[in-house]
Amino acid sequence: DIQMTQSPSSLSASVGDRVTITCRASQGISNYLAWFQQQPGKAPKSLIYAASSLQSGVPSRFSGSGSGTDFTLTISSLQPEDFGTYYCQQYNSFPLTFGGGTKVEIK
Amino acid sequence: EVQLLESGGGLVQPGGSLRLSCAASGFTFSNYAVTWVRQAPGKGLEWVSGISGSGGSTHYADSVKGRFTISRDNSKNTLYLQMSSLRAEDTAVYYCAKKIGANGGTFDYWGQGTLVTVSS
Image (cartoon, rainbow over all chains, first blue to last red; front, side):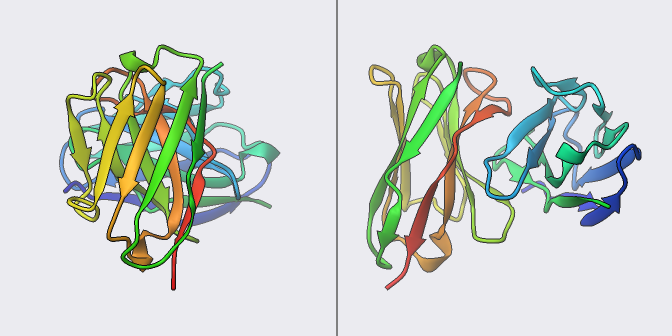
């Protein structure tokens, strides 16, 4: 199985800050990488697929990059509604696997 | 508007069975693969099972293989998860999610989830 490792596990940042979350795959997954946001008590929301393509309706302050084993999710200017836990997920091969999550808190 | 509505969750004893349903609307259901993802209380996301648009291809996580069966009825726009030999560690919110394509790919829409509690 492909292991997905996210860092940091949590962070606290101010409104307007640039935030970066990293995700590393235990083996190469090309660009078969997605990012999700989950707020407390809610279902996950799809943000990015194919490592860098934004899902419809996702604000442009979110961006993704990377290929192979190392990936990044960037929020260019953190907004109050961006709190929650962010997960990466590989879909290169079954079983599909998620990272452990990064909890983002607004200072 | 794409909508996914899960139902069928509840309290079940260890060793028992339960069938979850996910009613889909707002898209041509048979054109897309769909999947189940679960989240144990206070934990992260875990992929459980997926099925292709035609229903001809299915995949399972090792943790549920042989105990859970995924199926779909394209005439009713509904996805199912038959769960048997349930264990305490199966306690979780179960989400259905629509995939981007007919077979592979990741998810673009999620349901709100249904809670399954396995306890005596």
